[in-house]
Image 1 (cartoon, one colour):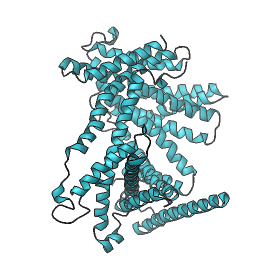
Image 2 (cartoon, one colour; image 1 turned 60 degrees about the vertical axis):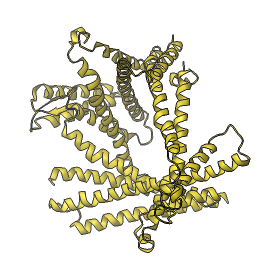
Image 3 (cartoon, chains in turn green, cyan; image 1 turned 90 degrees about the vertical axis):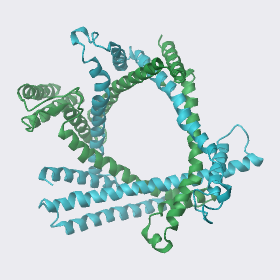
Length: 271
Length: 273
């Protein structure tokens, strides 16, 4: 029951989904769509496990005073700010008491985290949790300027949610990706030294593609660099990518077969 | 640009510079940005998945039912099954009942792997094999269309290199036969093609990151400093002074980073010697 039933479920549903692909009947397509909806719903429920895990990790870090534990408050603040903004929306132009509500709700959540993290004064933090939660509830009941917003066809409508996305998430994520330019360039300096033919091929190809748009070289050699780089991307690189994509595809199919046939059981964990 | 938006842009510029400060070394500003972005991105994806995934696929389908009948009277009550399976995932919180969470997990994995097999075969393997085989070599324009041009990607030579290169690279991945003789020589050509491909992909990735870096500098310049002027808010006594300070700050960070990397490299070389 604990291990056999999951194995049987994987086998039956896996084989069913493989075979239904070859059945061009509308009922088969209906079942296909229906089961895809199922896994979407199950997958989203699983996201809550990840959020809880992040919360636990942050609280444990605060509790055990691990190095840099103070920054975990920022993680929690960012997480729950998005949750509060994501599930509330303005009813008109006025903000009303929205910000006192948001601050009280966030403080209540932070006090819950503090109550879980602290070893002394649990009563004080629990009391503060109650106080902030009470303020948030009172504002939520009596303020008509905004309302909770759990399931509507319009999706997220709160301008604060959009502002956090535009001015915190996007700058941070794009800067982190931009930062990698320096790290992979320095890694390349160590790894790509022309020690043998293969490393030299790698180095030369990378240099040609990187120097493609260099204005100084373009002034001397015209568009030769761009044409050479274009040829490298569309001919030898294309050949390599075709082989890699075929290899990856076959690898995915082989792994999927191993899972369906019960050879690969890592997803079940221990116990 | 109004003052509120300018404040938000200032926050974005601060976070951008805070993350770039990691190029010199790990510091509290970087840690602030790092921890904030972990929380905000987790919250963002949770909310988006709720509104764009769970809401249309579950709640709105059960919407015509009544909660006191547990939505069994809705027009699509069978959508309660994946919801129950999803809730079963939470048995992971109990050591005693954690095994129950394997059922929804098994269902998820069974369906996902079953879908993947024909789709992967079609979208990756078959499509690439067709692409390799369907184009015949253009012998009439072997050295370039309309004249001698070795860099012509449509020439017969380029087509031949793509065909032979892809075959040779596939042979390199074939480990069931020893790489000796003609087979070994073809595999060797395959690894050359693969190394050129890896180099080109690497160079392309670096250039994409550099483009992002330029974009971040433009954000600081256009969105923050110049808009600061337009609102009448001049962060560092006028646009030009502010621009110069930011520019030299970035240059200093980059130069500092390069010197630090070279020193670290030389030290490790000394030690290994």
